[in-house]
Image (tube, rainbow, N blue to C red):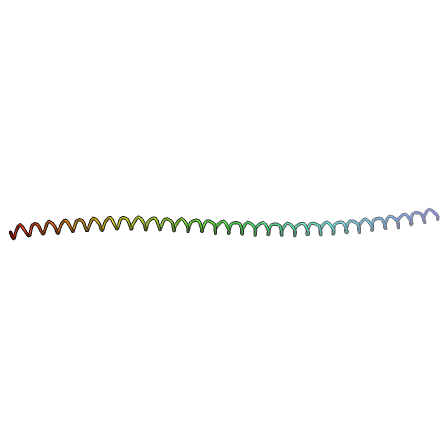
Length: 115
């Protein structure tokens, strides 16, 4: 009888140990799942921050590049304008010289014909 009682007590104790082990395992599994989710959430937040930072940096670089290109374009436009102005002045001078000498020759021809 005593042996049967000890066996039943041992079975009860074993069952309690098994139930406790199951509960502990479930608790650990839940904690690990929560930790994984927390880690994933933090990683996702960090990824978003990095992407936003990279996008902001790229946007600023693009704006800087646009500014540089606009400045170069304006400088080129001014240089072209000055170059065109000087060529236009030279062309006007040549035309005026040509017309002046052409009219002078015509005047001489006219005076020889009349004289």
